[in-house]
Amino acid sequence: MILQPLPPGRDIPAPLLTELTALYASNREFHALSGDFPDPDDVRPEQVAVALADELAHPDAEVLLARAEGLLVAIVITLAHHPDPADPDPWIGLLMVRATEHGKGYGRRVATLVEDRFRAAGRQAVRLAVLDNNPKALAFWTSLGYKSVAHRPDRALGRPCTVMRKALPDDRE
Image 1 (cartoon, helix red, strand yellow):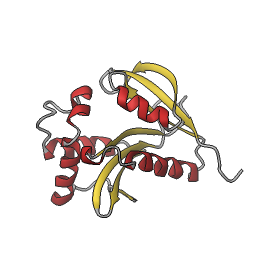
Image 2: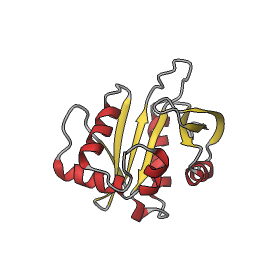
Image 3: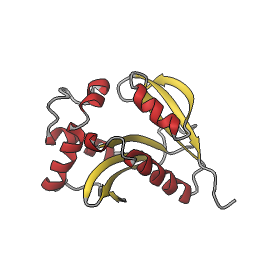
C-alpha cells in the first residue's frame, strides 16, 4: 500500500475526482451520520472537490490517498497542528475506506502508516474525534489503541464527539 499526497492549490484531475467521488459515495452510512453532504445518496464530484479544497485551505492539512494494487482504497486527512495552541498533537481529521473494501484491513494499515509518518516527524501522539453517533468508528479506533480523552462538540458543525488520543512511542527505544 502506498500513500500519495493530494497536492494543494490545484484542481483535482477529472479521473482522480471520479475515483474520490466513488469512494465518498460508497460510504453512505457515514455521510448520513455526519451530515457532511446534503444528500448522502447523491454525493457529487463538485461537492467532493469543494470539501477537499476546504481541507487543503488549512496550511497544516494534508490529504493522503491510499492505493493498493492501483485501486484507491482510502483517503485520510491529517492536520499537523490543531488550531488550539494548547493542543500539541497532530490530528487525523478523516479516515475513509471504500465501502467495498471494509473489513479487509485497509483502515488499520492506513492508520498505522499515518502514525508512522507522525512518529518519524518526532511527534509524540496523535488525536482524532469520533462522532458520538458512530459506534463502529469508536470501536475501530479503540481496537487500534486510541483512548478517549474528552467529549466535546466538533469545531466545524458542533456535533457531539469523543476526542481520542494515542501515544506514539519511539520504537527504537
